[in-house]
Structure formats: C-alpha cells, structure tokens
Length: 349
Figure 1 (spheres, rainbow, N blue to C red):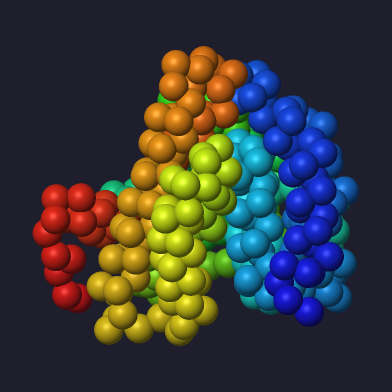
Figure 2 (cartoon, one colour):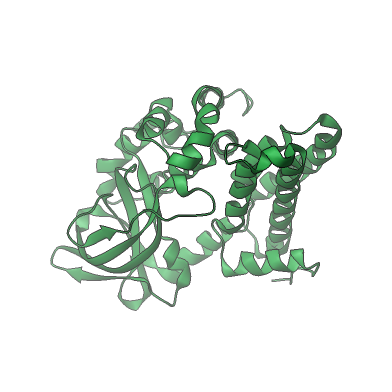
C-alpha cells in the first residue's frame, strides 16, 4: 500500500474537502470551533502514529507527513491545533512511567486531545519555567510564552527545568486551575484562529504519576534540535494549495521545484541524523521556504485586488506561509535561513 492509498490519507482528504476547506475563511476570522476538533478526533487522525495496541494506527512517518500536508493546505489553523497532539503521543509511547497506561490509550483513540508547552526549553540556559520537588509531586513556576489550542485541548504536556539542568515533562489538564492562568488569546498576523495564549504558572502542582519523562537537558536537546533542521510538511501543503490557484502555465514550473525540494526534504527526514548532513538539511529547509514564498506570492499576484479581501484564499495562504517561517524556529535555523536569503553559504558544522 502506498502512502497516498493509506486509509488515513483518504480520511484526511475527505475531512479537508468536506469541512476544513469550505470553512477555512470563516475559521481564519472567527477561530477554530470545537466542532472541527471533534471531527478530527472522530477521523482517527490523532492516532496516526500511535501504537496499534493502544488504539492507534501505527502508520509510518510518511503517512503522518501526507495527512499533515492535506490538513495544512485546507485549514492551517486546524492543522496547527491538532499537530501539537502527536508529540505527547510519541512521548508516552516511549515512556515507561505510569502515566503511559493512563493516557496513551485515550490519546491514541482520539478520546482526548493534547497540547504542548515545551518550546521554551530552547531558551536554555535561560529558564522561563522552573520545576522543583514539592511533596509527592512537582511545582511549576514561570511563564510559557506560547500555548496553542487553549479551550480546545483536554490535556497538555508541560515541561520545565529542575535542579541540575534536568528537564521534566508532565501532563496536566488544559484549563485554568490553581497555579495556572491563561492570557487572553493572542492577536496574530496569521493563525489567530488557533487560540494561542501564554500561560502564567505560579505554583502549579502536578503529582509524580503525571510525569512522562525526566532527563538531563544535554540528553534532550540534540534530538529536539535535529527535528527542527528538516522542512515540515505544512510548508509543502500550503505551497501546493497556493499553486492550485494558478493557471498551469505558471504553476507547472513552480510545482516541479516544489516536488524536487519535497523529495529531498523527506529523504533527509527518513535518514538517521548525522552532523555531517546538518548543512544539507538547513539548505533544503531554506529552499523549501523559498518555494513556499514564491508559490504564495504568485497566488496573490494572480488574484489581483481580490486577493486583498479577508475572504480571499490567496492572502490567507500567504499569511500562513509567513507564520511557518517562524514556527519551530531555533537560533540555528534562523541564522541558516537568513544566510540563505542573503545569498551567503551555510557554515559547515
């Protein structure tokens, strides 16, 4: 069975065609509704890479990428809310702690949806969220700058830094509670619909049995940095959606470039991480964003004045493309991207 023929790919296309794309303009202006989340839960897409033994599909990464492209191209805000869920699932699948048996099944089956609050770990040695032992659990204090899906997620995977540089990941309910308070939803240039907030933590307590992972920062960081080196599938999904708005005379050459960089990006994603290929990954990532910018710009140009209406699909895709430029960004990828834009070679590492 090819990735395109996988049942979850067919479900993603049906969800995109029948619900996400027709409603995308309204969602962009009004927010992702709970009914969209319920539709995603029912589709089985939340369990795409989850273990079969826990109710997931256990599909290969290529299927996750294909479904992500489809969802992002139809409604990037809905894609962005649900894509957070896959990290908690994968974290639990690799955990041997008690929380695995409590949450992996409901998350794999789509009975619950999880958000994530851990990107602030990339600021280390600055510590936006600090954790310390308190009784038979852990106390979290600090600020989570970005949390997506507030009011839509059931639980969240929250991370902080404990003594001696240990990072700790634990689950808690995604709601206001003692020690946890959310800001009003942020107004963003794109994906305001994703209900992104900041979280103030002032003595949030979680029990030991909610902990999913605990390890030194130096062990966690390399894997996280490696994941950010690759171009994500949403880049290709948005670019493909933009090209669908062009006549083939102009879409054809851009589509050929997109196919080429997509092929190379996914080949690298399926290759074991090696420092020797870091430069190549960063270069392909920058090339993917270049094609994305060309595709969305071309869609706006083709749309003319109509593209400037907030109901226009071209301007929405262009704004979503801008959002993807900084989504998952690290200092390393930022420098590499800027060098590429300036026509400078990416330094060897």
